[in-house]
Image 1 (cartoon, rainbow, N blue to C red):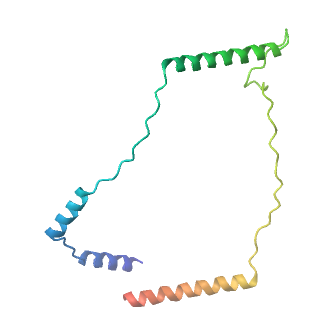
Image 2: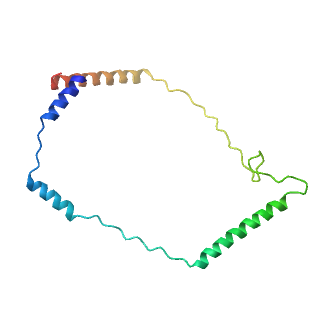
Image 3: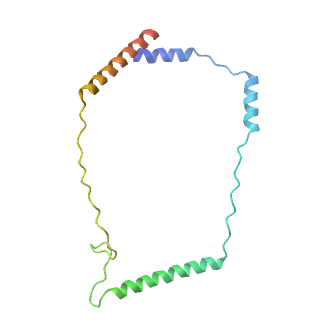
Length: 135
């Protein structure tokens, strides 16, 4: 593989590419003359300040209702459930387990023979390529 890499590097070093001034000018003109289209973005509607006040007050009211609801749920003398201490105020369903019945695939005789044939074909192709490039 080392010889192949050296041969490819040597071949690449021998390639001499020159761009004429005319072609260079045509490419530059083509690049300058074409500009990508910018899609027009739809204007976002501006909401009045009253909308922000109303949404903020609605969020605060919803939080207060939830706090009052959970406080009413707990009985006097009982510690309210604190998330993260093993008890959860919201019941969580257990994740079901799946019993996978799997077996490893075994190569049968025809498949093994096909694999050997493919490996042999690959070796022959590799040798042919090496002969053609002179390695």
